[in-house]
Each structure stands twice: as structure tokens, then as C-alpha cells.
Amino acid sequence: MVAEHHTLNNGIRIVHIRTNSAVGYCGMMINTGTRDEFEDEHGIAHFIEHIIFKGTKKRKAFHIMSRLEDVGGELNAYTTKEETVIHATFLKDDFNRAAELISDIVFNSTFPEKELKKEKEVILDEINSYKDSPAELIFDDFEDLVYKDHPFGRNILGTKKHLKKFNKTSVTNFIKRTYNTDQMVFCSVGNIGFHRVKKIAEKLFGEVPSNLRTNERLPIGLYIPQSKTVKKGTYQYHCIIGRPCYDLKHPKRIGMYLLNNILGGPGMNSRLNLSLRERNGYAYNIESNFSPYTDTGIFSIYFGTDKENLSKATELVLKELDRIRNQKLGVLQLLKAKRQLIGQLAIASDNSEILMLNAARSVLIYDTIDAIETVYNQIDAISAHDIIEIANETLDPSSLSFLIYK
Image (cartoon, rainbow, N blue to C red; front, top):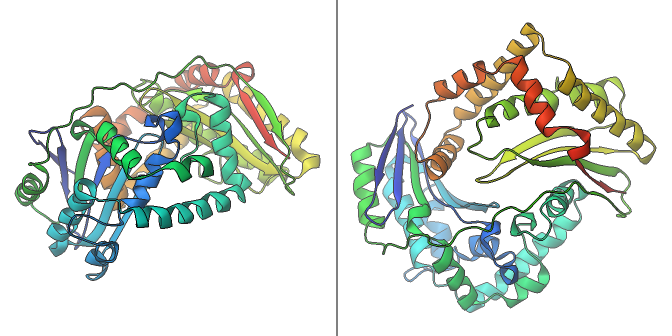
């Protein structure tokens, strides 16, 4: 994999990875998300992700939807705490069509009031649906608990109260403040020459006025462990245990990925899955997650269980945390864990859409892309002592927060 780079005069960065596939991918990743919202803007980043497709200076909503679908392609978008992404999938011959459409959407959307009103109803339905899914909702409530009174803790969808107040002015003000050209990366993957990609990008994005970021994000405040129980009337009890963790530039983040994979990663042979599900039958789903961001990260363990098993399941989780903090991994155990993580990364990188998004994110955060072999070498360099050290820094029970739905 060879990634080629170019930076336009206005600060927009271009990244391309050439593959042999007949299918191509491209997208614009913007370093803007929920945490960039003011208090009265809660949910506006996600709202814009919806209404950005509802009309431009030269296209109506139907024409935007049809532009790629007419040739078998797809157009999509998503919002996270720190990113807004508009991306497309297409046959390689339709690269110009896809890139031009993304350019039109990002820089020429008109946000018709009629469309804003309709889309608010769609998002309200999304919010109501989300509230009916406690296994998903608990993650947002946990972040709100851990990052209390900070925009990072707010859920991405927003609230009914805030959503009703959004209008064209509030939307355009947010975009002007946060859609900064030096915080944008246009990334593509496909059997397309870089010279062509660069030429098209210069034409589509090169004339966009420079709008560099001058505002800084609100720093993360002091973390104080919390415990909270919420009555939800659910059949199962849902529990999350966790805390803030390493950020995207922390030297121990790779080790944390490995520790997380051992503890409760996607493999059925993770320690938590073997303990709670396979040996004791206390939980159908038990997982741990590590999500690093630009200046913070979050580690969490989630499980759902019958109410009579909550105490026993929690004890088993804490037992596994104590074990990984105090018992050094054997040589074969560590080697097996490394091979498992490397295998998962290799399989994920074989997905060109994931490859594109990861490349864009890497350039956005680090302004470079490490070869996958470099990441493998970093994993191989992790020692059993490193795992114990990381575990004791992040998994001390006194530093953990607890949230329970019952």
C-alpha cells in the first residue's frame, strides 16, 4: 500500500491509495463533530450530516440521491464526536462524478427551510428509536457520566429541544466556524492514477476560499470516578464499567489496543467472554472497547445480564481486571495475542472503504500514514511488562466508573 499526498493552497489535504479493484471509494473527512458544538448547538453536527444532502445551488435532493445511484454507486455520511464524513462508493470510471458530487454537497449546500423541517422529524424518530435500545443508549449515558458538563459527553443525536431551534442561520454559522479547510482531508482509493486524482481535486477544491481554524477545543476537565444506577424497567440489567484513557498520540495506545483485545475484544476467546459467557452463562454479550480521540480516550466494559446475576458478573469482571494487572502473560500467550490483533488488522485493511477512512483519519491527526508493517512492528515490540504497566495505569478499580440500567 502506497499513499500519495498533496496539500492545496487553502490547506485541504489530498490522499490517494491506488488499488487494482474496479470499485473506487472517496470521501471528505472533516475534523468536526459533537465536541465542537456550543451548548445551544447540541446535535447540530449530526443534523448537518442529514440536511447536507437536501439541496445545493445546482441540485435538488432527488438529483443528489440519484447522481451516484443511477450508475450503481452509493453516497453516505456519518458523524462522530470529532468527525463528519461524506463518502462514496462507485465504479472507477465514475470517480469524477463522485468527487464532484461530494464537492458540491460540502461547499454548495443551500439548506432549504422546507427540507430542514422535514429532516427534523426524521431525526426525532431516530432519537426515539435510540431510546428504545438500552444496550446502545448506555454508552452515551456513560460518556455523559465520565465527561460531565463537557461537550465530549453529549450524545451525537442531540435532543428534541435543541433540534427544534435549528434553522438555516444556525447551520451556516456552525459550518463557517468549524468546517475549516486545514481540517479537511479528501481521500480516495481505487484503480485511478494519482495525477488524475490531484488534477480533479485541484479543480474541485482548489478554488475554495481558505478558512483556517483559529478556535481551540475545550480541554477535557479533571476526571472523578462516578457510580450511578438508573431505573429503566428493562428485562435485563445493563452495565458499563470504564474510564477515560489514552489519546491518539499517546505512546501506550498500541499497547492498550492489545490489552483490550485480550480482555474483551471481538474474539470469542477473549478473557471476559470465556469467563462470563462460556464458563458461567451470565451474559450473552460481553465486550470491552478502547476508543482514542485527539486529547482523550475512553475504555469501557459492557455486559447485559439477568438481575440475579449482576453482582456475580461484576465480580468476575473485576477478577479478570485484577488478573491482567497482576499476572504476567506467558511467552506463548503474548505471542498468540499479538498474532490475533495483527490478523484482525490485516483483514480490516483488506476492506478498501475502511482503508480509505483510516488513511484520511491518519492524515487528519498525524499528517502522515504509517505502513501497515510499521503498525505490526509496534505490536510485536510490546512486552508482557508493558501490558502489566498499562493495566495498572488504566484498570485500577478505584479509578473506574460504573453505570447500571435496571
